Amino acid sequence: MDFMNQPFTGQLGNRLIELLDSQDYHTLNIAVAFAKNSGILRIKDCLQRFRDRGGIVNVFVGVDLGGTSYEALTALLRYADSLSVVHTEKGQTFHVKIYQFLGADKGLVVVGSHNLTGGGLWTNFESSAFIQWDKSNADKAELEKRLSDYIGELNSLGDSIMPINTQDDIDKLLENGYVAKEVSEQIRVAKAAMLGGPQERLFGNGIAAKLPAIAKPQEAGKEIDPNDSEAATVVPSFGEDRTIWFETRKLTGGSRNILDLSKKSLIESGDPAGTSFESDKENFMRGAVEFFGLDPEDTSQRKDITLNFDGIDYYENTILFPEGENANGTWRLQIKGVSAGNVKITDIFRSKGEEEKFLVGKIASFTRISENYYFLSVFSSGEIGNFRAASRIVGRNGSTRSAKLLGVI
Image 1: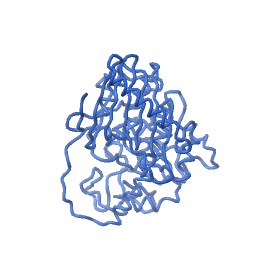
Image 2: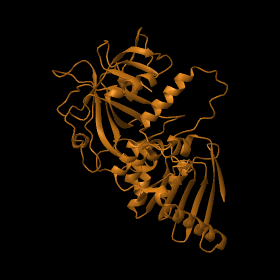
Image 3: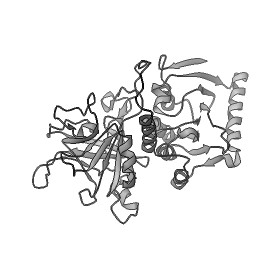
Image 4: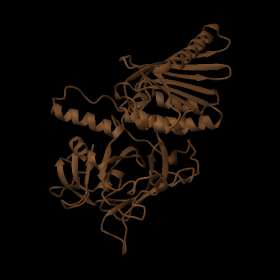
């Protein structure tokens, strides 16, 4: 038996990646209270490789206390063989954290405090026990039996367990308030903190903890070697991933899929001092393109980013500063990516079946997972007041009061 105290003696996320990439196991059973994109999107490629080799992934997750997001369930639906939500209506919280690996002649179980989130798998203070067994050890074989019995007991919960078979099942949970989109939850928490007012800080910042390497965007249909250090970037992180949002209005491009990113932004509220948006120009902050890792003033740059939307990665969404007849003096994000299955994100937008183009007259938010990887969420423009109220900085996506709004949460 081994014992891990994260982040002092290791990080569970890294161990899970190693175990999934080993040849020792054919099944992974996960039972956790909370799941977020920050955790799932960092292990999804390993889950897929495990399944491509014939492995089976079964996930049981709770939806109590706002700990599991709509996006997390959407991603898990794509990267697990079976997905079930456990919940009771009498306040009985599903709070387990178990990761069980099964092999032909051995197994391993991780029992501790780690949820399926970026914090739970990498940056939080967490503890867990690793218990290995093989068929020759009667006592540990009994442990495997008890864990298998527990999975059976979960599956027999009747109305307190909901198999998630389609996206419609997840949408129903969203519509009835059992889960929320991650940005909506960020807004709720940020607004509550603002109502509480500033408070004296009584504690320090803990210890540094790194989130794992994330593969850089690749061409659709091409695989990345997970051992290729040139294909990944390690992002030091503490806390939640940062989000920027944009008021879209009409947009440009034939599919209304081109988002302007300002070189500089007129400040409406908040103070960018001490952030990457800080500028020496009075009443202005650095432009929105700064969020995506580009210097607003260096217009020779060009960058492709990956956008995760509805659980699928779309590659080669291009950020550039156009020149020539079509130039308007601002950066542009061309949301035109293609999935590994050669599906265009614009076709997915079109399939939403709205009278207007899907992104027109909305709020588009981008949450950074790594330097070149973001997940995209889209909201009704009617929520603009909530977005403004929850933002640390609110500005204009340009230099005039008539420019579209943007904010950093």
